[in-house]
Length: 273
Image 1 (spheres, rainbow, N blue to C red):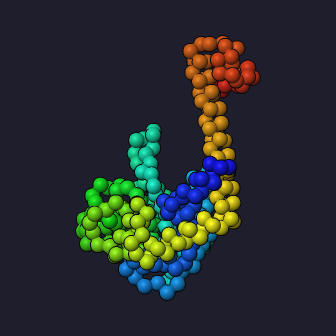
Image 2 (cartoon, rainbow, N blue to C red):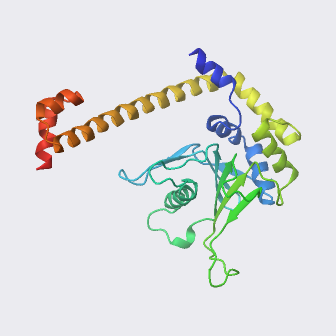
Image 3 (cartoon, rainbow, N blue to C red):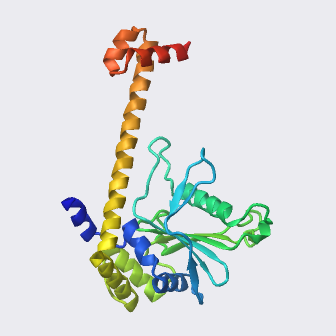
C-alpha cells in the first residue's frame, strides 16, 4: 500500500490515469483540441471516459481514454502513448495497426444499427506520443486517405489520424501546444495552459476519492496480470507436455515432469491421436 501511495504521488501527465482525469476537465480538453487543430469549439460533450468497446465476444476489446464530441458532432479520441510497443512474435511495432483498430471500433460504436453510412460523423484519432514513431522530427503527423494515382485526390470519409510527437523539432504548432509538449516531456511550466494542467494535477492528488480510485484500479490491474501469468504458465505446461509425448515419454513421466495430473496428460495424448 505504501508503494502505491508513493506511485500515486509521483504520477505525471504521462500516466493514463492522470491524463484521463485532466482531459475530463472540459476547459483543458477543449483548449488542447482548439490549439492543435486551430479551430474554435463552442462546447464538447463527453462519452464514458476509458470506454470499453467490445463489439463481439471473440474480438479484441479496447479501452479508449477520452472520447468527446464537439458542437459540430465531430468526435475525438485522445490517447497518451508512452511506450513504442513491438509485438515480440512479429517484431513489428503495433502503433499503426492500433490506430486502425481504434478507428474501426469507434465507427461501429457511432453508427447505430440500421443507420445509413453517411451518418457517420467526422472522427479524429489522436495519439500523443512521447517518442518519434516515424523518426522524421515532425511535431505532428496527420493522416488521411489519398489516391495513389492522384495524391491531390482525398477520400472524403471524414476520418483523420494524428500522431503527435512531443519530441519533435519542426513543423507548425501553436505556442500552447509546444508548451504542452514541454510539460509532457519534462514537467516544464511555461504557459498559462500548462499552469492550469499542473494545478489540476495538484488538486487531483489532494482528492482522497481520486486516490482510492487509483488504488482500486492498480489492485485490479495487478490481479489481471497475475491471472494472465497463471494462464501463461498453464499453457506453457500443456505445450511442454505435448512435446514430451511426441518424444515418446510415458504418460506417467510426462505428468511428473510437468506437474500435470495423469488424467490431464492422458487427455492430451488422446487429442493427439
